[in-house]
Length: 147
Image (tube, rainbow, N blue to C red; front, top):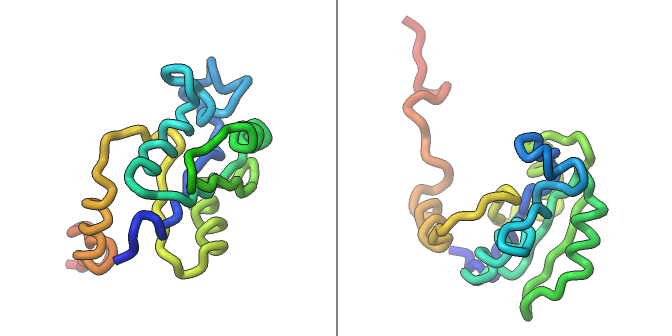
């Protein structure tokens, strides 16, 4: 089992935020503020509070504003935040693949930049460790048979 400290967190920050269009014409969705701080800050804070220290932001749309926020913000001791330009029009899977290739076969966590939730990340990690990979759906292609 890999510790939270050793598990990098990939945060998907590249989309256009079309459902928040009134806000995202000027700034990317991860920088929309909640309680005076960007959503992205809250997501990083949630993971950092549970021991994660290494964050890779898969950027795209208005990436320079995210890069500016990361560079100008003072992160807690031990927390490292880096931006990876994954392309302005790259879909979600392409962003994960690009950053995943940088990390090699190393385990990493992935979340959206607006994934603010109260989740026990260690419990989620233990669940995946105990199931030797992703659980299979009864509707997966492997379980289908022709009549």
